[in-house]
Length: 239
Picture 1 (cartoon, one colour):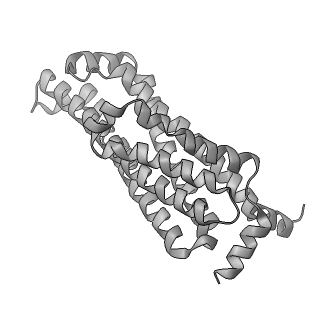
Picture 2 (cartoon, one colour; picture 1 turned 60 degrees about the horizontal axis):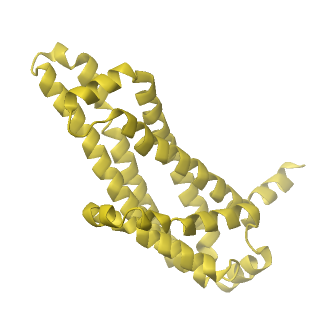
């Protein structure tokens, strides 16, 4: 395959759709494990000393969680760019709004990950500074971890707004089934409940069950891609 043919193939809407789906899966796996499953094994939200002992006793696991959080941000950025290119034929303003809310969500996701960075420094080297005792350092570490959890809730909420916009552009597109847009928007509504965590906790797990709509869209993009001819037609009309 020549370079020219490769570039043409790699920029085809069907390839972009499939790459967006793959990146979505990678981001989801990294985010769920890095922000939810691993912290659930280490963090005791009401006991700073137990949390510190868990982290220091499983330092490699904690570092793995941090690495997964960073990878999730990278995957999310790439996915957002591909979705903008993929949905630009539907409308430039709509595609820009998808990208905007996606980037806001990514910023919150990155912020929630970064505040975990001082945790090991506090627990392993904080006493060297002499300003705080061990109990205070452990409390500060737990504070950063809880802050990370709140940031992740905000990330889910803005990711939900992004999903609602994606659902709208899918519904308005001519190259994807409209039912996928409805299901994606419903998934966004479920995620958006995390803007107010007490409501999200009350509705759990039904709010997250709506995420099947996101899975349906991802599955369609991965297996079937988009209708290339209709994509090109809609792109030509938008020029």
